[in-house]
Image (cartoon, rainbow over the protein chains, first blue to last red):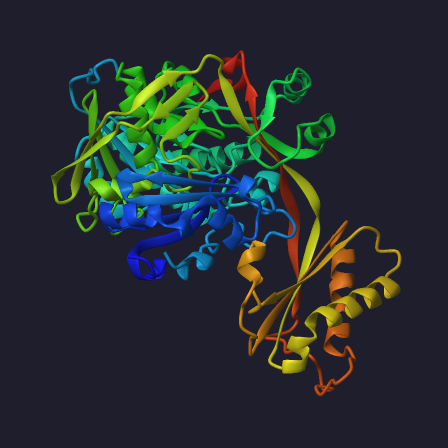
Amino acid sequence: MSGRRLIDIARVIRSKNAGPLHCTLDILFADDATFREALASPAMTRESMARLYGVSATTVEVIPYAAAHAIKVVLDRPVVAGSPGDSDVYGAQQHAPLLGVVL
Amino acid sequence: MDKGPRPGQALRVLAASGQLGNGIPEAALKAGLAREPHVLGCDMGSIDVGPAYLGGGRLATSPAITKRDLRLVIQGARQAGVPLLIGSAGTAGAAPHVEQTLAMIRAIAQEDGLRLRIAIIGADMDRAWLRAMAEAGRVQPIGAIGALTPATIDGAAHIVGQMGTEAFLRALALEPDIVLAGRACDTAVFAAVPLMLGYAPGPATHMAKIIECTSLCCVPGGRDAMLGTLTGESFELESMNPARAATPVSVAAHSLYEQADPLRVHEPEGMMDTTNAVYEAIDDRRVRVSGATWTPAARHSIKVEGASFVGERAVLLASTTDPRVIEKRDSIAAGVRKIVADILPGAGDYDLRFRAYGAGETNLFPGAREGLPVPAELFFLLECIAADADTAKAIIGVAKQNLLHFGFPGRLSTGGNIAFPFTPPELPAGTAYRYSIYHVAECDDLAGAFPVRMETIG
């Protein structure tokens, strides 16, 4: 399993606001086994996600959701959605850093 | 609805639209109406579209499509003889949004010769009440936004609260043809009739949470009407477009969408928990769901949203393929900024931003901007927010001309540093707002917060 990239094994990698103060990243896998293996990877911890996005780990949550074979990452938005300086009002284009993550 | 089904019997809730006004697919709506639903529900709004609509009191959707969609669901509900529930009227659900939606409904009733009894639920928060609650320490931010101060409350253009099922139940008790609600929890629109008829709130709320986005929970996802059939402890889901399939995984995955917590949903009246939910395939495009629980809140609470005026916005659209302009873009921007300040010393407070698309501008998070390749082309979006539109236009105009001709060491492109896709490349972009309030307030009197009034048309 190790060495494979998320873009090669995930079925969906997306981002979206959850309210104007949070951005959430969803990584959906095709089956439970892939989900479990990804979840066990050191690349998918809260600290790794914080490093990837260049933010403090205290502003990051990683939530496994087995029913959908999914991992959710919740980030505090650095800018309230739609405020001056925002660059993605819906938060729908913040998933790109995940694509190259190596498990 | 006195003759409606009772728990144990099938209660059919048809979700006609997750964002009314964007064009309801008609075939699926007709197919759903043919299944004899007991209620028709539509969500019309969201906070996700940004603060301009709540702040400016206007709809995000076009008047023509909004009226078309309203006509489809009003005609559908009247022909079926069932109530129509509309939540978050006019995108943001404040008084001007409700009024604009109501005006369209009045026009439809007149044009189509309909007599309609409408229960209208207001969602505008009383500012004195909100101030008192904040002073009493009973209002909390929902995330990284400041504490709610009297200045924030006074400065908001509009402040709404998300109503829950309690408000819809009061409106339904008046036996209207239509419930037109201001800002509302999307679940409340679809859970209200099940609760009125005595169905268990756990499964009713879970079903509502899934169907409020219509067929988005299917593969492939879409905007076609979705039918939820609740029997009591379980419910069945079916898209009214035969090309869309609800599967156990697609339905479970929908709990992730636009939610920070996929397992728990907080409503004014309590909390729905899907930790023990079970998703079973009935066949290849229908799913049965059970197991969600409901815990009534010890104290009722309301999510409160407010938007405040920032300024008037003007923008410049331009691009470059010159490698030296691309390389030196930050120092060029600093130079242009200084010239603007020198030429317009009396412009007051303004916010001038140089956005360079192609170099990571889309990324909100600093880590995502690292290690990107040097682009061959950049798109510049210059944005100015100033106190008034004339000042914003003046600043963006001066910035344009000086960005075009800015001299810098090693410059080759003395004909101009940037290309314009058309003229004028500087454009007014309307009024800028920001969300200033996104808080949760305890509430001792939900009925007082969300008043209902009746109007009969025709």
